[in-house]
Every structure is written in structure tokens, then in C-alpha cells.
Length: 314
Image (cartoon, rainbow, N blue to C red; front, side, top):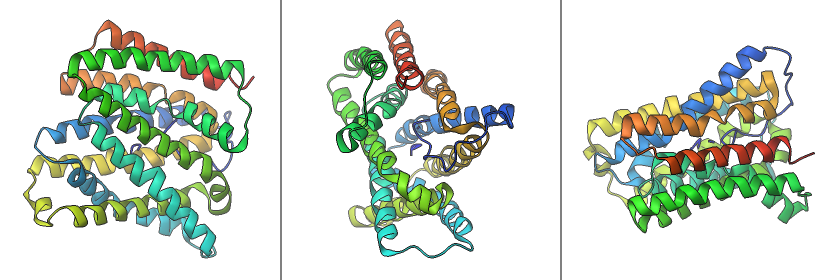
């Protein structure tokens, strides 16, 4: 997942980091991670051109990513006490909502909307996290937060109107699925803080993503004949390997290393390059249209999230 984006696709940090130490390296890692995350939608759209369905495609991605995440979980668990029952339940819940469900909804939604619009919807994740935090924990909401929400959602609605005109009513269904994906990942953020403190971010990510990988594989075995996996075009296999490594495992590690150097706030701000890179890659590799409506909507979304994250808490 999407990164899954998205930084909306990074796990919560263990520590605030030290912005003065390794600033240049941290910024480079954060930018590289955001761009790598944004490539996921491009690869998924390319794979769909070869006639593969969402259930098979996400299974292949998770199948190839599973060894890396299992190794990550093992590495981070060395010398640590085993998880108790409550912690295992937490890991299972976060793996199901934050990675499995969010990724599956995102993959299905990408069948109906452009990659650039998908990235803009996922970029709304901080607003959804705040809403859930307010709803569940009564976290205060400021006027700055509301101003940022208004700007960013106005941008999404602007691009949504363009999508419906371009792709028809199916764009509404795709947008809803991707939005629900963002909501699912927001639940992961809101409920993961305590486990991050107990297990550490690397161990939690490794375990939760391993759970998600197993869920996607089991889902495929229940819904599709095993032979379907061997009947896909070779291009789908190579794209899935690329998706699992360059756009899933690598950006998770890059963003986590960036957070250690520059802190979560600056790393999240750097993630603003994600929607821009997705749009540019979509135009270049997918032939997606870049109109004044897409440009205006993207600027509104980025400006809204900037206001939301930098001014909203003041």
C-alpha cells in the first residue's frame, strides 16, 4: 500500500527525530520515499492493461513483499520479549485495517479513476486522522484545521468533477473506494500509537504488513483457482515484483530512516512531492490528461494539507 502514500503512508515514528542532524540526508530519503510510494498507482494501472483482476494483482504484490516484511519483523524482534495476547490482537487488527483492507480497496478503486486522482484522495489522510481522533478521543480542532480541510476537499471535488466528465459515473465508485481506503488507513494511525511505543515502529510495521500479506494470499486462494496466478502475463509478474520492492518495501524503509533524521513533521511535509510525482508519472507513462482543472485541484489539495499541518495546530 500504498503506501500503501501515503507523509500519509508512513507509520508513526518512535521518536521525534533531530532535524539538525543529517538534514540533507533526511530530506533526500523523505523525497525518495514519497516518490517511490507514488509510483504504486502507476504500476497498478500499467498491470491492469494486461487483463489482471484486483484480487490476483494484490496477491502477487503481497506474495513478493512477504519475505521482506517477514525478515523485517524478525530483525526488529531480535532480543525482544514475545508479544502477549493483547499485542497480537492489536497487530492483527492493524494489519487487517491499515494494510490489507486499505490496500485492497485502493487496488479496486484504481480500476475506475486515474492514478493522479487516487493520490490526491489518499493525501487527505491527515484530515481523516484528525476527524477520527476528534470523534474517538475528543482531540481539539482549530480554525486552521478547518481552513485546511476546506481547501483540500475543495481541490478533490474540483478534480472529481473532471474525472466524472472524463470517465463517467464509474469515477464516483472508484473515488468512494479509494476514500474508504484512506479511512481504513486513518484507523491504523489513530490506533497504532500505543503499540508503536510498546513494540517499536519497525517491528510493528513488519508484523502488521506480514499479516496483510497473508490475508491477501488467503483471499486469493478462496476466490480464485490457483492456476490463475500462473496464467497472468509475464509483464504483470515483473510489475508486481517492482511494486512489492521499489514501491512498497523500499519506501517504508526510506521514510522510517528519514523520520529518524528529520522528525515526522518535516518528513510529512516533504511528502507533498508525492501527488506531483504521481501526476507527472501518470502523464508520462499512462497518458493521463493534465488539464487546468487537475492543476488547480492539486494546488488546492497541497495548499490545504500545508495549512492543515503547519497552521492548524497553532
